[in-house]
Length: 102
Image (cartoon, rainbow, N blue to C red; front, side):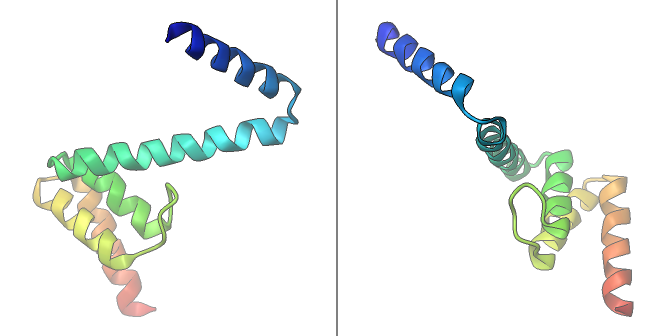
């Protein structure tokens, strides 16, 4: 089993070595972004106020590979604000003000 994993890792590393730089960086950037989103989502569902803020902020700005959604942003920011996250409360107020006057 370990031999198989080592061979696969060695083969992937050799392919990366000969791949153009832009092609070797992009998949890892996308993977890291997707991993960050899933990490924040998991922790937000467990009630972590910082993760809830990050999810709300990401939905509000269309970050971490998420589509921009004011409905989802409001949900997560509101949950974080109810737990006392000041940045979430400020972000929510700013979003309400910008939506009310736009």
